[in-house]
Length: 141
Image (tube, rainbow, N blue to C red; front, side, top):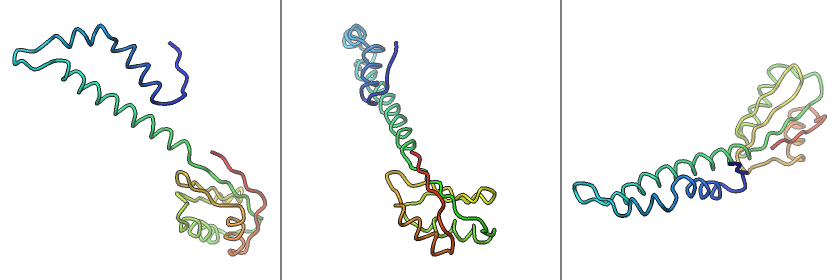
């Protein structure tokens, strides 16, 4: 069976109807255990736990993938202590999750928080205040 990822709810609905079709539900509806507890309600309780767990996993994977990564290449001639200062400046921004400077490539990699971003003007201003100029900005989702 081929499933394309359109929406997590659609996948869960397809899996639920193929794995737990109508014949199983009608059989469980009429069954009771030795204590008179309806097995359908016990089955549905367990089944719903799995559905909720799968939905949370799918949604969390989608959220993680949506975070933006910004790579900023700066001009040459930056020292090691200055790289730490740049990292500190960017980590202090509320939109930034992590910031790391690659000294060999003179590139600052900024991982943004989900749904957050920094504009090019703001990036150039923060780096310019540290005494450096931006050569290129590359954004990836």
